[in-house]
Length: 586
Image (cartoon, rainbow, N blue to C red; front, side, top):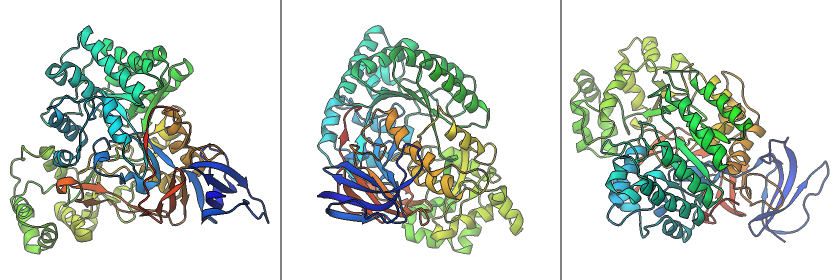
């Protein structure tokens, strides 16, 4: 008697091996039988409480997303969308050196401002939504461990929180750590890994700043601090050293290779994986290739360096619901302050309102709005601002830029931009790629994804709520890379699934999942590949305190299974919450 049977499906098992027809039997949250089927085969014997007919469907492991920022969202959202709607069954939080533990009583708001500044998660939502109730990192895990989710949740201990806890204001202000400071931080990191942290994370890029403009604590950490914390992490157990290195956002094109030098030495000394963010930057469009090759050579020499690769261009989504070129126009500011969302959409469609906004000069940026000064510059970037369409096209051709569309229409480019943003009841979003699109196509991304050192990451699920929505990477890998790409070579489905199942799970030591095999955790997706569709991103206002976030849905997932329990059917949440805290590698 099985709890669940999945019958007649085409299994892509996560190992990269060729697909095959099989039935899968599940009992007590584990895969207990995988029976390959031949012509005329009656299939797997035995009754089941529930059976999913997967005939004509792809059956794959649940996806493991190793780069998310649900550290606060776990307090109020058991569903953990958008990730859970894209076949993800395990998320890893606590990336980029920001998190909420350890925390000294009274410094909670400081950690919120740090997370808000670095990851663009509304501070009001974090303030209202986080339950707190912990001080140490083990306490934080204990609180999470009492909760039930739609997906499994693993966490990393963050340098920013550790530094502020151990050093107080000196740590928050990035003052140099003394040997005593390093010893105190090391105790906290080792304690965290012993309690179940999957890794230690830090950030060294100047692009990551708190709301007050201060770089993330640890940005300028000296080598003795980095190595001390790396050794402490290794002393605690199997874990990953994760970072956003200097120059990751293109602010410095010399630093990235210097960073790799110490990362190699650290990885070799502690014998633990070191994983870092890697994207193509316009300032040096071929730097990523050198970094990947250095990482591959490091593997050969015994140091496990894993660049985390994004599946598509990395930038901003712009439109009336979020940030855009007309943010500073007096009429728009007035209407935004006066109108409800529905009223604002209707008013923006009024030709007289459009004429007024287009005729006005910009007001000074609002100092209370993060990044506000940069959005006036959008009007000077229309040659690289793309209309995305429905379904969205993340590899658009040059004729899809606002400037090109305006030329074809014989219109003023800003008027064209206004009209494009008015589509879908003023909810349409346009793409401004900052990274991974220097060549105007995805050829560089494909090379990154297929490089032996690269690992799929950087979705930032739960973060960058007003500008980015990349938690949909898993669906994008399946649709764009394995099925739809039209401007270059695709990738085999078997490769794409291995990339976001086995390989991501293996990096964090989660060897109980990521493949379909007897004894493995029953985290499974049943997918209608022909119908699988990535929907356009849209703005929702469902965070605590009415906070906004970009979300992106998908259709074509017939079922998602976590620990043998169906959590979604045809994209709809079943209400089941089998997901639990993941404590440590296994």
